[in-house]
Image 1 (cartoon, one colour):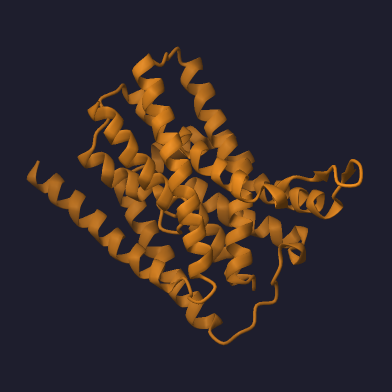
Image 2: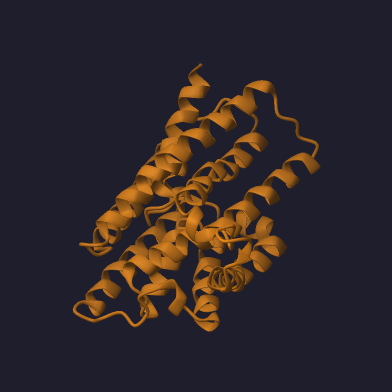
Length: 279
């Protein structure tokens, strides 16, 4: 029962931090220090990635009407604007998709540690503040997803690659920072980030699951229950978090998230430095 309570808490953390640009990885590392799942290391490693499926399903459900590229109204027909949007999403997914598949294990071994997470939390926190200050009173050049061209989509995808390489960057944080730097409005940057997450998170989850089973791992019935619990909670909380974010940025900028990241990064550094010193 305790493990399911832990899964619920982790699902809440995932649902909030996956969409707010504050790094789900950074929060998961901290939470895991205090709520260690009593499972195998292989399952826990897989759980922290696959739980994202619950979060991404929230996007699919909430934006279904804008994502589905065909319609049955007045007979079946394809929506060319939505097909174009999906092609741009696929173009933006190329950098992280290709590099992630080829070097996922290498990046995990090199950079999945609290120092990298803390540093990237702070760096991108500073970037949020600097970019918002520079963009103050400036009208964004791109105010709809339709105005994002293929070149712009690819460059935003490069920022997503940074998040794939360096944990703590925050996938949503990196792509939003990149989009803001390129003149995209806050709401469009957030929505494009949500849509870009669909292939990225489905791909990452599928890759992690394949590796899990190819390594000869088997989930127990208890572990399946833990995983499903985390995913369902992440789905519900994600809907709330996405609605909050979209409402918030209509009247506010991203600087509060920048300051939060900086403070969290410092806390992560101090906490692990203290625990290592005491050890």
